[in-house]
Length: 247
Image (cartoon, rainbow, N blue to C red; front, top):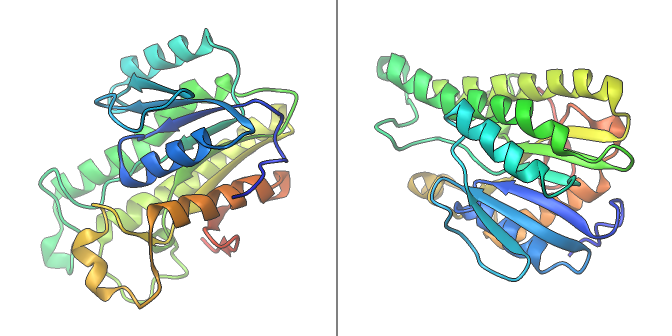
């Protein structure tokens, strides 16, 4: 486990999407870390891991009033070192990743962009002010290598690819604006690899041997990346292994 020594002591963390496979992995790993003081675990249902350091809250980032209200509640508790958006929509809610142009639909694009782009962007609007100002902080959202335009060699998955590419642009743009005022604050996207969760389950048959990660392994590696990044990385998409993914 990374020592998180690049952050201040008694770290305060927010994990959004805490009831999901990767989100719950982040919550559990951070809550077990001696350097972490508390973990606010946000999800639509308030479900997720429990523990002395874990503070569950209900949160729905599809509703701006709910995002704003959640930020106001958290503001009363003090400033934070790390905010992780462990959310994403690939399939479900009546949509599937498209295999060809014949599968495209307005509904698929609308739902994918709402969950993968608008939700994280609106969360950043209200949650970035919750970060500390006098030490290293990180705001990060789960992206994906399939959102890389230069790395797209097999096609398909139109809405998801486009949404993750748009998320990468949102994070890059946020990093420029936020960085003008807050010189120690870092905003990055994270590619977790293929993790054994409900999101990846229908597609695991195509994963090469040794490349399907447990949530504990993936979240542990991403926390290493979070600990190692500096302001020179802000705006980048970083993979679980610490390598920058080209846009």
